[in-house]
Image (cartoon, rainbow, N blue to C red; front, side, top):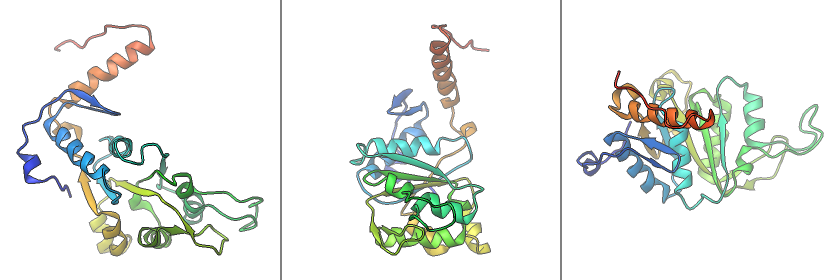
Length: 225
């Protein structure tokens, strides 16, 4: 699912550095960051795929931090294991009296991220009914709060991530094809850490240094063993 260009594949890049919130030490990761930097200059939707723990939210934050939206909010929302009504309420908000217990208006994650970026993690778990509403936002840039009758224009960029096989979801009817293609204007695939060369060592050294600072034990080093 990666959209790394041939010129990027041929790039001779190797760095052990921190780019904003991203720590990396593998040429392929450097190529992905170069792609992410280009994507950040646009407002297109991005779908980041890869196994758990590969840094999908870190990459999404990097895109936000290097974009023209960096002064706005970065709002992260995990879509996993939530009932449809709760996902809809948390994303779009609700009006006072929309349901029992709705004693006042509450804005959702889309409005919280207005002018910034909304990161939808585990997008493959979103119920079909909510997928329809998300698709409408991607098409119209408007939302409707639960219990509301007014369409609200919201200037929010969407970045989504998943460790699921969305192609399989489309075949099985659990993920809408039209939603997928609206969501995945740019697709970035993060490989597992085991396939990222010396980056594991880079990350281990970084975390050791960070934990050493927190514990007042500066200068900790990893042995070759």
